[in-house]
Image (cartoon, rainbow, N blue to C red; front, side, top):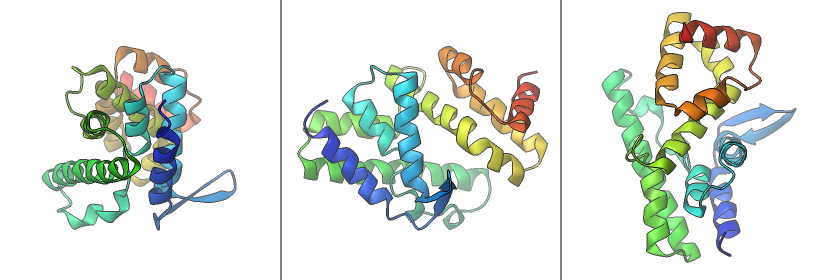
Length: 193
């Protein structure tokens, strides 16, 4: 890692610390996107320990500033959802670019981080796929239980099947080893039947 890496992580975390949404974990309350980013970094190191500096940066800022564009600012349908997601990807990339420029990263690393944050060339770019794999693993391990409580089983199973379809084969193998709640494990089993 370059000498700038720790500064970038600190800056990303400082930005995400402004998230007004919170999550409680282990009896402590955190800004939602801060703890998400930390979980992403931890899972990347477990899943892909030799990740490049650009991928480590992209993982940490993948949801940076997410609360600044709320879901309800777009129509609550499939098209609205997809437009919101695309707008968020650009928003995250823009914030990352600004921070990395201020810290002094060279343009090639900045452009690579933006490329990865926007998940370009999934299935064709190994690092974009690695980022997507980590997203899926973190979702399953930390967010699936709450998601399942908010939606009917049919929708949850459909989302799990779509999530599974985004994963690499290695990620699928890893996902099957995660320590999931009994209810999530049962849903995964139903989705994979």
